[in-house]
Length: 289
View 1: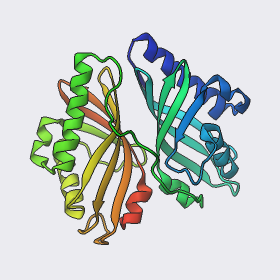
View 2: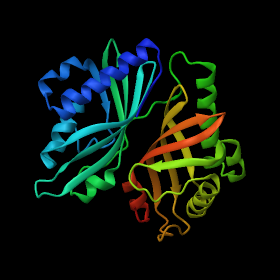
View 3: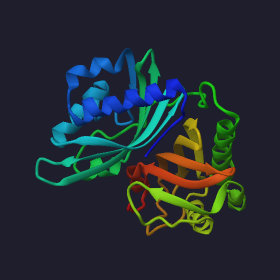
């Protein structure tokens, strides 16, 4: 599913990123990378120790482990000079094991090419396949926020999402969730189907999270908004001093990154999709799905 504002720049940037995936990540025509990457391109890949060499170097490194690797875009939101998307990577290891990896990518464009890149990777999957060098979380902006022109509705949607992260997730005011989420909102995790829908299930889930991580805090690193969609990169920090989901307490720190997409309807979240870096959760002492 693709969500793009009708504005011309947003459409052009969505087409640019779509073509990048067609040419580089499905057809493997790496010699054409110059069509897409700005000469001053900067890559803030969180797996810096593993990747190296920017976008093309990252993919070449992955294909060394997974020779038949290809990428397919699941969701895309284009906003001014930024494009944020969910991607599913599939392939096989050299020993014949299947790979299914979910990532979220953020591109900043300049002069019709990609000038900057950040991502969130479910490193737990790569770790399970023996890929090393999975440290770091990439450089994030000092003052994140919306960039460029937006409609009043888009600004209100962004404020709604930021308010939910502030009040519900960082200040732990679960009673305020009703102000941000519809009672029957739907929740989609890109890795597992075992995620319940609805506001009451949401409250129960995060009550357990907060009991396990009493100092849990969220920081929204990036945000884009287009139409009825808002997408964010978020860093979650805390310490596993309680018990949750079959693990803990471990007294280990959590530093987990996610990418979340929200569909807003009548001033509240109606639907939510997420990509999670589950390796961070496992390193804190909890099992992963």
